[in-house]
Image (cartoon, rainbow, N blue to C red; front, side):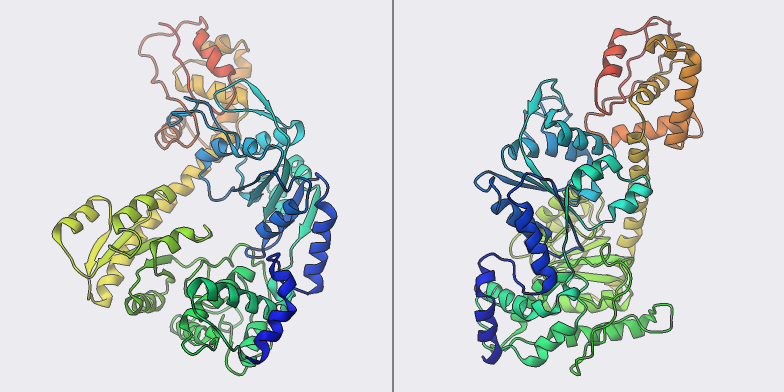
Length: 564
């Protein structure tokens, strides 16, 4: 009980605010929070994944004059592109194919309060102009309506990405950046505030003890020293999850040191696969009972260091490019055995005891493969499979079970499972199933990357270029398009050339193929239907329906054919 009580007394005041620490870098950030909170200035929170940006956003809101009003949050990276427009701005009935009733968006929810947009760097180029307008004018129209809504909100945005670098690469609008960057606050990574680690350890031990129902009476000096020496690439979130794991492993009221177990496991995996950092040195964190000095940090951790809750942590040298195999099974020996197989074959495991733990994880990694117990304690495997489809349609799933029955296996395979394995199964059987799943995932990821490229290309088109593209796809010639839009044939050719160039289409056939994919995959909200070219000659008379469609706002590819 020696040092635990002392730590509790030291950080008692901070615990009530849920912001724990005494380091100068954290105090500096909190001073900035107190300075900007009473104002209505936009705040941009910058920092690596897991540094507590959402917690700081809550603190700004709670210290502001809007503290009694709503605090609304949205993770821009967690919402699919075709739903994000509706999530932000709401919609009217019929605005999208799935819009069966009117709905308000996050901006309206945050009226008179605070809106927190997390991972703003992942906002699509198509939505950035809309966000800029609402920040400048404090007004917007819901999709499907021409009625202008005026709102009064305070915006807090956060990102782990380099927005200035994205501006140089044309991925983020500079005018939007300067509007968001009214008051930037940089949050320090945990490796730059090591003096806060003992306080955080005590804080998370107390939190996890209440939730799990276990009491910790002692934290050894060696364990605290190991925590302090660790590089913490996943920052505070990684520390919190590791403390919870250590608490589960504790049997005698003493908090164990899981870092030494991780070091031995990662050393074994690295030795098997010969991973190196280019200088001949193995890429591992060499944390042992001897408590080495902190390792130097190199490179940008912000894109690769997120860790998921309740999974087994590998060393900070684990490559983010390894295929990620998620395992959901409440059978601890079986889960550990599968984890060893996955590591041995050079893949990256992420394990969970319950299905809900998997769904509650931060969406930092896309599963390349999911190995699921058909009947976990909290959710049936088939129901889990349905919910997986919402997150990522083509995640390959391997079902495992203790009691195999033909109807269940047939139902699973009809639902799209890669394999249905009955315990006990040989290592090579699981290996072959995962290898087949990863092959399917690779194909799916290729299609998704191609689809993202098509969406981004279409988002880069101007309104006039989209009108020309829609008319080209409806079968009109340049002269007829010019008559339809009231522009010269030379101007039509220029617009048509830019459309082909931006979309990366070598011919109209390529353009039709891209447009068909946009329609079939509903890549754009309210994308409409593509009309087939009319088999009969098309006159030059303008079709009034086309004029209305072409002049409407929003990224629509609908085109009405001319009259024959």
